Image 1: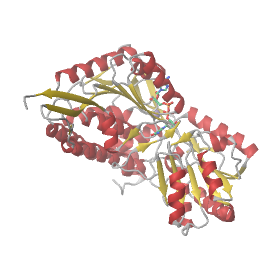
Image 2: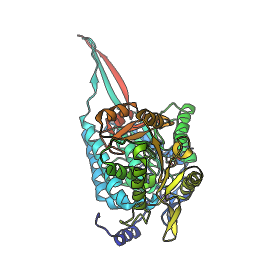
Image 3: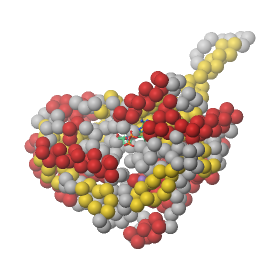
Image 4: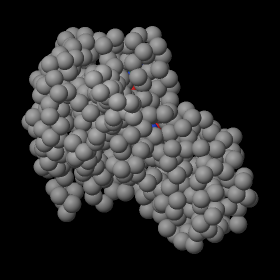
Length: 498
Ligand code: NAD
Ligand code: MN
């Protein structure tokens, strides 16, 4: 697959069929209302499929199915080793269908198919496998009470987990939530983003094939204000795992307060700073990764390194390196392995990015890109764009643009760099480039973010928690910490004759 040509990928895409119905209680079904919405390929503007437009009624059905499954124990009380075997099988099935999973995300939201085939889809299989392997290796606690008392402290599944996900990594966001929640023994109702529902629907089908029982993993496509809201307000959902924008994350906290006080785990926006110090020895590597950190996935990455703080003595030379890299990262058809960047998810997002760019042209120094373009006369594409000498309070440097737009800001001292980096409502991630070990430790300690990457960007693995501080939310995906959030601590106290 990795040696496929452009023609190969186009032929594979043409032969693909799409699941467009909701997946509830082990079956593909139409929305109760019978309504559908268009699922669009942003690289071609073509309608790929009609997808069921789920709303409150469909969410109710899915939650009821999840609850029934949870209560009869078909998954929640399955022996850990058996649950593990099912999830390992699902990881295998994702690998067997890697090409299809990669194509679904690429066609649906515009990412490069070669990235989807090497990052997103293998990542999904890996995360299912990782959580599967954990299931029968985690022990609970016995509290230190006296003789005559046995106090067991166990981690038990919560019940029905609602998951609401964004469109930038559709399969992986469904996986980050789904794999951990399922591994802990919960039932799941997933509402994927309306821009990119296709891979989650196929994932549900593969889960059923792997042996996940009916009702345990449900996927209801639909819009945020109807289906997403219904899940957030549902009286019988125990936990709501959300990834998306900060504004909607706040709404989910409100939904919880207005309904049943369900746990809410928000993972929201970012405006991640990347700090380049003059004592970084390999500035070419720093420039490669700075470009990757903002142009990968068209900049539609929550942790994208969109603010670049460069020590003034090397700033101009560093910006020259970045301009060359931006010029070598032009967008093209996501199915063409030669393309360096894909399409923006949809027309609305493209227009939103271009509003920032047009305002930026009036207030900062545009040094690369800055135009919306088409590929073969079609689609939503934005050039890799760099603004230099951006004022710290310019919206370019403060707001999450969620596109391939980099703001460069010079600094004169370590303290100034740290204070500008921390002066943000967001706190998701940061990068630091220096070969001075003490500085690396000192700066990392002071950055108020969930992940600091030193001499790299966006470091991430199944073994380490991913999530933010401040208004980037407080949910954590990945690692055993994520598994823990899908459980409750339960004490069982037993009196016996000592
Ligand atoms: P979004 O907040 O618009 O939508 C996310 C999800 O919420 C979608 O499924 C949407 O349908 C739903 N939704 C929208 N309005 C709703 C409402 N009123 N009630 C209930 N649900 C509603 O975000 P997006 O544009 O899809 O994704 C981009 C955002 O996601 C960015 O802010 C990005 O930073 C963030 N993100 C964060 C992480 C992270 O881990 N922190 C990862 C990826 C993306
Ligand atoms: Mn789409």
